[in-house]
Length: 302
Image 1 (tube, helix red, strand yellow):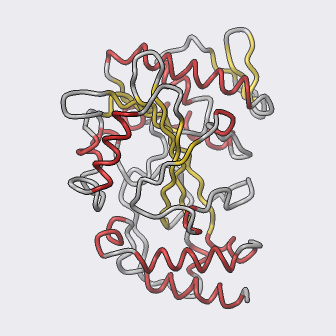
Image 2: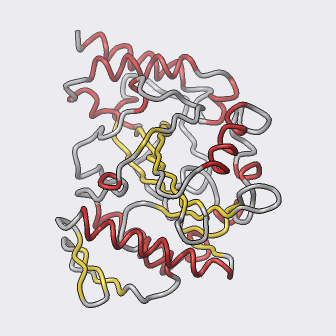
C-alpha cells in the first residue's frame, strides 16, 4: 500500500468548511481548476494500466460525443500550457509530462481518453436530454464505490439513486437547477469525503470497513476526499464534471499542526450523520469507535 507522496490534507472539507450531503458549490479559478501534484506520475501510471487492461470498465462514450470530447481535450491542454508549466510542456502537437517524460499526442482518439492521460482528474461529460442531464461519456479510473458500467447513460436521478436525500429532496432539485442555469465561463467546485480501508485509487465496489476498530484505527484507515468541479463546454453546452481524488492516511493527523481542530471537526461530522448517511458511507458499525479514536487524538493534542 502506497501513501501519498505529497503533503497530506491539501483539502479538508470535514473541518467545517463543507457539510456532507449538501451541494456546497464554490467558485473555482482557471488557475486552480486542475491540480497536478507530486503524485502525478503514480496516478497516470495507474490510469495507463487500467486503460490497457480494463478499458471498458473505466471508459465509455456515446458516438455523438466526439466534438465535446475534443473540446475537453482543448480545454485541458490550454489550461496546462497556461498554468502548469512546471509539470507539463506543450510542443509539436503533443503534451509532455515532465517528471515521467511521457508524451501524449493531441490528435490521439478518443479525445476524452487522451485528456485523461494528462491529468490526475477523472473526466465526465453530462449531456442534456428529455430526462435531464445524463452521463454521456466518461474516463473514470478512480471511482469512489460506483461502477461506470452501471451508471453510463443514466440521468442524474439514476446516478444518485442511492444517495440519501438526493432524489425527491432539496439536493437533487438544486443540482438540476444548477445544471440548467450554469453559464459558459462559470467554474465551480465542491468536495465529498469518506473513510476507506486502504489508499487504493480504483474503488469501483462498495467499501468495506471492518467493525473491529480500536486505538490502531488511525493507522489502518484513509480519508478519501473528492474534489469535484463543474463547467459548461462553450461549444455544445455539455457539462464537464471533473473528480480529483486525495487520500490521506488517518494516522497522519497525529503529525498535523491542525490535528486538534481537524480531529474535533471530523468527529463532529461523523456523529452528525444519520442512519441512511452512515449506511451510504459504510460506517454503520464503525462510526462510534472511529469517533472515539478521534476524540483520543483531539485530547492528546491539547
